[in-house]
Length: 157
Image 1: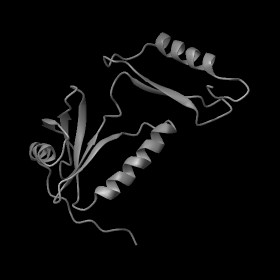
Image 2 (image 1 turned 180 degrees about the vertical axis):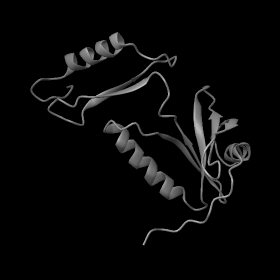
Image 3 (image 1 turned 90 degrees about the vertical axis):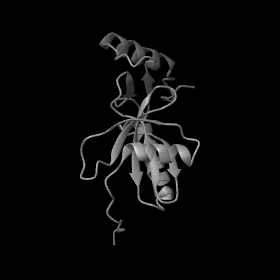
Image 4 (image 1 turned 45 degrees about the vertical axis):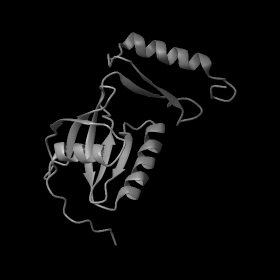
């Protein structure tokens, strides 16, 4: 039988950001509430690096589950799926907060070599300034990657 979680109260992103900072070494600055969902379950926050991330709330006692989800998302990204990354899971006792990267952030790409001998093999790239890559940039990145691959193994040695 599926696990039953209690209904989540409407998220106050500013409060959640302040609580996350107060009970951990995670440093985030509340930017704004994100639209959508019945409970406004996500807020946009700024990390010390200036990068934007998403802050969401999980039910009390669910930090271990959030860690399992984080591991699953990591495995999906390795296989080329555009899944978010959990930067931090913060357990404050009465709340669990999760800081997540934005998967649709410009300038970040994953290349999957679907015609190669190893279907899960590929690489990722990101521009330091968030600038989207041009088709020429993509082609150059792919050519550089393929030039490093050993034709015998299908992997970079």
